Amino acid sequence: MDKRRDMTVGSEWKEILIFSLPIMAGQFLQQLYNTVDSIVVSRYGGATQEICNAMFAAVGSCTSLIFLFLAISLGFSNGGGVLVAQLYGAKREAELRRAASTLLITQAALGAALAIFGSVGAELLVVGLMRVTDEGSRLYAIEYFAIYAVGLIFQYIYNAVAGILRAVGDSKASMYFLIVSAVLNTILDLWFVISFGWGVVGVAVATVIAQAVCAAFSIFYMVKRYPIFRFKRKEFVFDTDKFKLCLKLGIPAIIQQAVVSLGNVFIQRLVNSFGQVTMSAFNAGNRMESYALIPIFGMNSAVASFTGQNVGAEKYDRVKRGWKYGTIMSCASSVAVALLLYILAPDFARLFSLTGESYNQAIEYQRFMSYCVVLFAAYMPTTGLLQGSGDAVWASMTSFVTLALRVAVSYLMVYSLDVGYASCWLNMPFGWALGIIISWPRYFSGRWMTKRVVGDVLPEREGGLVE
Image 1 (cartoon, rainbow, N blue to C red):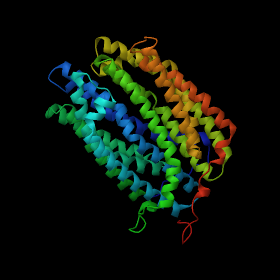
Image 2: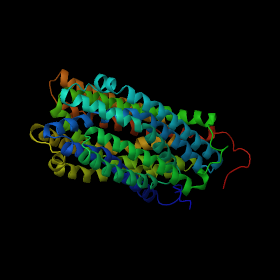
Image 3: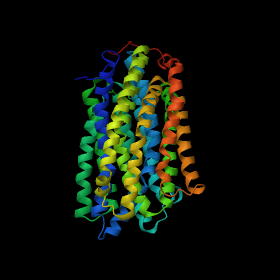
């Protein structure tokens, strides 16, 4: 049965909210990957707590590097998803199918290439780029990333499928995929680490297997559920024209994701320079931050898909109402998140067996973030609208400027103001406030309404629309 969601009709706030909830659930499950990895190694990774602490710091030190490698996938999937969403809103299904197949082929090829590069160059990346020089954590970090990188091809394929399905209104699919993979990852983590004693190697291998299952399940689901994606041999093609359009939208989105990831890499480098205590504290706090931002990212994705479909259908009044409701819901949810973040900070730090100074720093990080998370909530729905409308260059530029400011403030605090380890999170409100200052005027200018891309798509081929 075809259950694509048409968001060009109905109550705007309900459509966005209903669409966002499965995305949030999926993101929660996705965050569970690294959280489970971290909890397992922090408790059962080695014969002593000292070894467990070193493994925990090592896993956390690779997080920003992992997302840097995923930046191309996320950016290209977002760009391709905008094209698919606008083609769906315009009812041009034959072209939609060619765009989807092009996106899948491109993502699989890129994922394979980066998997090889990441595995072979793990030591250079972990030590040279991420500045993991702490003797207790360095070798564990190299082992973890070298194995984790193998799974990049599966993550690239999954991101392509998830982007396509979100574009046609199916936000529940990614939740189904991640339920399967998160449960499998948890079981394998415990099995490999506790029963086999594999430590960081065990959690990395478990993650790669779970990602492979997730990719296979996502393809099966897409083909089984949606007849439009049951490609015949001559239909699963690499369409140069669609690739150029995906690239037109994807390059700004890739740059945006890469800038975000690279900014986090520089912040992580700063964290790693303070040694294992701050590395462990930042890892725990960063895990909590990932959960705290789930409702905001969910609204961002929902507003992007909502905007894409309605821009394709040329319903700009609905887009404007969707932005208003999305921003209100994002900010309201952030207030509740901030309260929980403040209250639960000690409990979350204890999850990772933190004690002493690492424990205190982790609480400090989380509670500071609770004071300023509403700024991020007010900023992200607007970037979702800009992405969905095709105004991806402006969205990318905003991300670049905000992350550049965060990194600059962090390093200024450390090397000029002698603030110390706290600079790793004190930078947040500066970047998020600047994001609002840049993105909101762009929205109110209305220039995003001129960025619709379906007019650039070639006319329908023989046979007209595929019903």
